[in-house]
Image 1 (cartoon, rainbow, N blue to C red):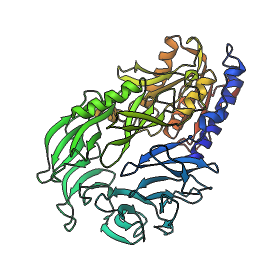
Image 2 (cartoon, helix red, strand yellow; image 1 turned 90 degrees about the horizontal axis):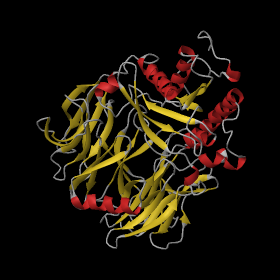
Image 3 (cartoon, helix red, strand yellow; image 1 turned 180 degrees about the vertical axis):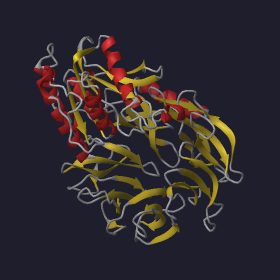
Image 4 (cartoon, rainbow, N blue to C red; image 1 turned 45 degrees about the vertical axis):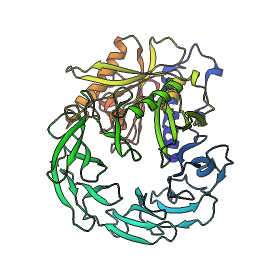
Length: 538
């Protein structure tokens, strides 16, 4: 993540230098005191990734040490902080509680992304490397609630191309193969007894849902679709007989169903939304029930099935107004939980909430050095594409500047099978702080808006997908927000491709552009001094 931010910082520095050289200084009404140092937008968090221990007595979190994110532990109430890892070359890749006294964590070497699994006691003792294998990568499948010493992991030890499932002892490193990947399984799901009983396969053309009654039986296919449709298993029902799934089979938008793997049929529709896909479930192991769903429209939204969970959300949002509020970790009895806030102008904060006492305690701000009141607001917007399709997106306007004839940076997202969301984006806030409006759009082909919208992007790279970006720029000009002579385009991955396509196909529109790791055989295209390409250059 740190290397990614370094690359983004470099790309933004290039873009800013090119834009200032081309446009002149974009902040004629702002003084130097209004300029926030670039590094402040990309620092490591003060503290992050809080998780509460199974018994609710301790908290673990990531905090910088020796300029790298390391795991720290403290008592949940008025506890002294102890560091239990000592990474200096690379940030810790993630961690999770195994029991009340032991934590496992992931770490790679030299940025090779071959993450190995380690375990350490919360007092820093008995540290052990559990997967000391060359050129392998480990991932977490399930923390076993019926065992304080074992977890389920995915590991490509047997065959570097595929990931099998192992049960591993976090004290000794002893492993047992639980499920062997035949070569096409891309995801596994355990039941509530931590048995691996469902899987998803993909071959690039077809997807399938596999199921087995017990771990002693072979998997059998219960549903097969082409790549346009899929049944994504989310959770077993609490009697372990059926599945909750997110499916778009025979419909445009993904919806959540209860699914019978014996018959291969959807049994009950739990929730659907008319405008967006729904893929996330909320559940309670204590209540042994699904309590709600979350989904994204312009922002994160919830729908609750359980009145008490709805009331909890209401209480938290009442105490934390103006933020997206998520419960991100909970003790086994669900009485203590970690709450995370986010917004467009803030990296947010972490809180500890005691359900019995009704007490909310702030644990840490993620980026306390940034003043939220100085950040720019991200506004959800829509505009029509030239063929009438509605395009959703976000417009961030520089703080304290009249939104007229502004220099603009167009920032198409990567993927392209992805989408932009409302929330704090360091590169967007950096550009807004320098006086630029930033336009982000979910062009056709973006995910989350249903099959029809997604499929509208098929074979449309540089064509209708690019037209959606172009139409957004024309919309900004027509609204009087954008100065047509001071528009730049910047993006990464597919967004980098869209940057190059924009400079090549609509050179009259952009005065500057920077491609960050874009899909192209050509080097990045820059247009300094307002000298725009003819269409044959680059």
